[in-house]
Picture (cartoon, rainbow, N blue to C red):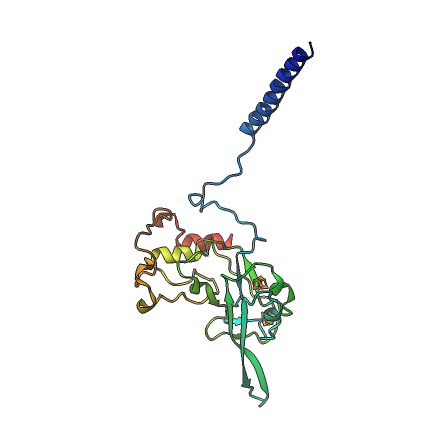
Length: 236
Ligand code: SF4
Ligand code: SF4
């Protein structure tokens, strides 16, 4: 008798479990989908502003930044991602002054902890939410964040507005052989790899700077915004 009751209890337990699973499956069938078809959805892709994709140093229209070359960010970076190279100049009044020469940032080393941004007393650096930063050469992830010929802003009037472009940046440039940084982005130009530095088996094309078998199928040029469209979008 006990074996019969055990049999039925197991049977009903199994049916109950099956129905519970089917109820969850049925419910999920009608819930709103949150997965996205990337990269086909680039035009409509929304990346949260708080997403940390890449460190940048905003410059204003006069090519001025807010970095005083104090080195605090470098000291606070836990893994040596930042290198602040300063130089001393003589001002018109004959005083010696330390200024920023080069601000080197290694994106490949960064853990996006944000300590550098938090501890910067001048608010000179910020994170953008661009995320397509993959390249074929690791050394290309090392960037100079201050622009060529830039200087410290005379007065801290306003924080230079960060220019955040659509996240199509470096991978896009690498695929199309366009070595210029995306419009408005503060990183310096991406230099082509010198032919002598490319190993034969690396698959990297010396002129185009990307593997020969890369196609643009995933990034149709027609899908990229024109400069007018981008301008209009920036205004909005
Ligand atoms: S986010 Fe963190 S790891 Fe990256 S540069 Fe700043 S302090 Fe260094
Ligand atoms: S970014 Fe900020 S903390 Fe780093 S050297 Fe410049 S002013 Fe100092």
